Length: 404
Image 1 (cartoon, rainbow, N blue to C red):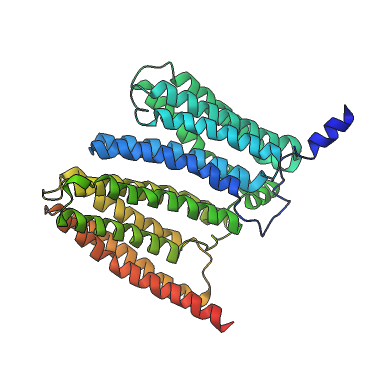
Image 2 (tube, rainbow, N blue to C red; image 1 turned 90 degrees about the horizontal axis):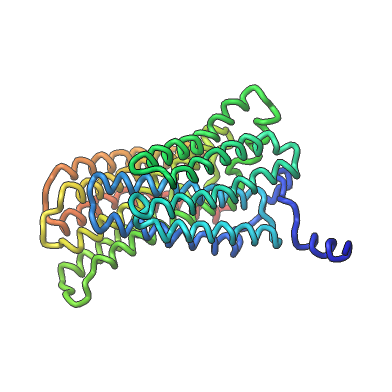
């Protein structure tokens, strides 16, 4: 019996401690596989928005995306801090995937007839994460300073979501909002409490986004939502009624997706955030409005292509320019949280100004009513300047690398 237990322990390890630093760790195939289930669930809520873009449905989309993003963040952060290449990590990762698949099944009508299924699926996910965070403190007394409050709050939020499954509309939405607010606020409360507790502050720093693998994970999630822009382009095409106008709109839609990719991966991706906790957590949380907005552009493009010869509705027009502007503003603010070498600070400062000015011009564009394809073409043209500055940043990096 003891021999079997020893053999089992070779494959089932305790959670990795944050102090066991793996500076050169790469994102694993397991993490990439885990992210795939989020492709499905984001596609579901984006498709629901594309069918009927209204102020209420945009609000629903944002609310559900925040829940989904928080689930992804916790699953990813746990693996980043405590995951190993062992059976335990694989088992609990796959268990989380089952819960997220359950959320995806009900995501299309989560705020409606699918509310019970979605809330119970999310509660199942939270229960798994609660156990995992509790386990880190059980095996690592130093980390208990963080794992105990995390486990307690996650347990409370889990109960809230279970209870919400049996509460009528619209009250269950209020309980979801309370649970989500508690979850999102938790890291900032711990950051505030750590100011007078050096041990907690050290553990917070050790558990922050400070390794290239964690930064890479955010870049990969951004690619997932950028994929939704491409999906939005394809969803708007009717192959049986393909015209030159639709073809042109398709090309512009793909160019916008490429533009957003170029801007983000020129200024933000693979750049480490600062170690100061407020800037470090700010960098991570800024990816929330960034990814929500990128994902929302997909449904907007779908409607532009479908109604290619019509004047855009007010809701579609403002969703398009508003989401694109938020992407640029998020990147602009995010650059102030990065570790930028002195020789590139002026370049990034000018880039920040360009992003802000372009975002303002986009919002001004939203005032005017015009043909759908012309509207999308102007947006693509406005993105040319940030792209040009992104090319300059890219060339500056390559030049510096070649000179070493």
